[in-house]
Image (cartoon, rainbow, N blue to C red; front, side, top):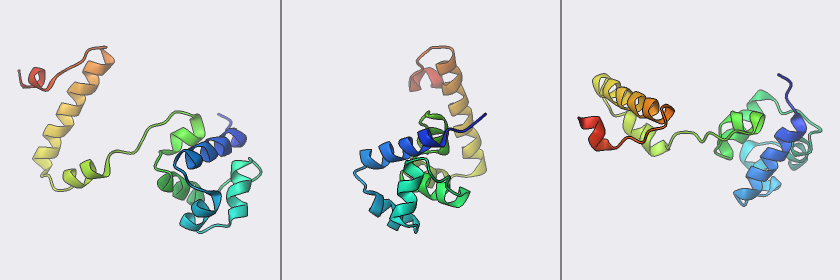
Length: 118
């Protein structure tokens, strides 16, 4: 697969602007120059992996959006924080529930919480 860095830059620019962030503010947050952000957004510069990850984190999207155009937001931080407090047994139950929900979605069904309890 060939990556189109012009499109990557356009997606970064679109997301940054959608968040109301200037190139200058983004560059400050990830410790690069404003010129570097401009060059990335214009497709003139390929960001290093470190810079790319920082951009993803700062703009709160997973890399697949910038690389492929498909947005998959990172899981809600609150949910992750709560999961970190769970026991391994609880994590297994939660994982099983997620599997049921995903299987239902894949089958085109909508499952309710009551359905899961049956």
